[in-house]
Amino acid sequence: MSYVCQQCKEPLQLDASLVDLAPSAYDMIVASLPSVPASRARYATDSEAEKIAQLPSPSASKAAWQQATPSDNSRASSPPLSTRAQGKQPQRNFPAPNESFVLLQESMIRSMPSPIPGAAMSKKATLGNQKNFPAKNTHPLPAHQQPEPDHSNPTPISHHLRSTMRLFNVLSTRSDIDHPLCAECTQILLSSLQRQLDETKKERDGYIAFEKEVRKERERESLDLSRQDAEKKIERLKSEERAAVEQLRLADREREQLDEELKLLEAEEKALEEEEAEFWRSHNEHLLVLAEQASRLASLRAAYAADYATLEKLERTNVYNDAFCIGHDGVFGTINGLRLGRVPGVPVEWPEINAAWGQTLLLLYTIARKLDYTFENYRLIPMGSFSRIERTVGDKATYELYGSGDLHLGRLLHNRRFDFAMVAFLECLKQLIDSVKSQDPTIEFPHQIVKDKIGEASVKLQFSQEEAWTRALRHVLLALKIVLKWTTNGGNG
Figure 1 (spheres, rainbow, N blue to C red):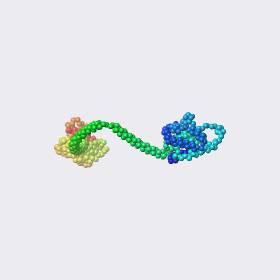
Figure 2 (cartoon, rainbow, N blue to C red; figure 1 turned 90 degrees about the vertical axis):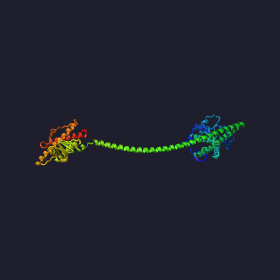
Figure 3 (cartoon, rainbow, N blue to C red; figure 1 turned 45 degrees about the horizontal axis):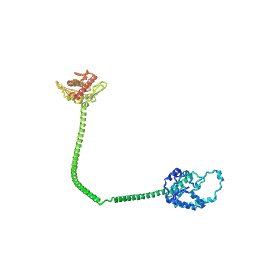
Figure 4 (tube, rainbow, N blue to C red; figure 1 turned 30 degrees about the vertical axis):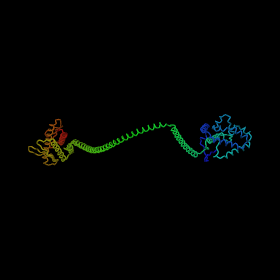
């Protein structure tokens, strides 16, 4: 069975909830519908009587049908129920002939006679007349009044279809719209109903406003005061008006006074704003000056810190240690990297020895100047590799503090003068050590100086071995290093 929309005549596809509609849901939907309108009930009664009159049936059958059919009042008042609910009703409400059936066995069906042709023709005629009714102008009957085709063997699907058709008939009966409807027509119908609802609400609001006005007029008419009461009320209102006018004058005077005060306050505020602006201007200037001074102070402090660090570094720097670096290289004592002495296995050139003696004499001369000490009987003349020592008393001889490796007769005389120069240097060193010991008795020297020997080794080269001479020169450098350390560390005060 196919369904079409009752408005646009388009085919419809029912929702699954309508196909599997339970009897309880059917009863709930029917109970929630409004009652059948009186015009629709009268039209249904008239159309039913007309349909019965048009049926080609005997008059006795039509009378029996009308007696078995419930009255109009019962139809209009009682909602149609589902098949299961109708089965629970009392037996006095007889169902329609085509809605009742008896389950017959196969043996009984075979023994039954064939149906009467006249009855079949009448049934076809009845169905033909029903099809001739127009879909838009006819109103379907309720579910318990709709003649249905004979279902000799009803199935669940046919049962659901009949329930659905009955539901649509009930909806059409209880409202002014034919069912079923498609989604588009339903939306159009809802829009039209919403518009009608809005217009009805506007009319209701207008009636309510009119009713309020009417009630107010009635209240005013009910308050019909006497003339004396009205005059008293007028006098009271005049006195209240005079008092209000006086209060208004007082308020005007107060307002004028407040306006004057406001002008004074505005002038004072303007003066304070100018004063504040001047204050902030001077404050900003002071801040700029302060920032400049702080920057200058930070710069001076940074310069002071840098200069102080440089001063400390300079104070910690010992220029004498850098200028006269005394060390050793094996058995040799060295000063500024120059070896002082000779051994048979390691030949040292005389220019290196003479340069080392020149540095040694310069160191002794520098220490004496720093200590402001003057040697007795001798004067030091530092001249590099050709340094000399001059005797200040007696013959005032000058001794050369450098040697030579030439093999000739003059070499012997020169070596003799070189030995006198080294002995004189040792005498000057002894004088300086005695002066230092006199100032600081705690200072100690590992080797004692006695005449031409220091630590049991002679500084003379002519009549001694080279190893002893080299050892004596190493002791000389050690004594000079001790005196230099004491001098540079401020031990002399």
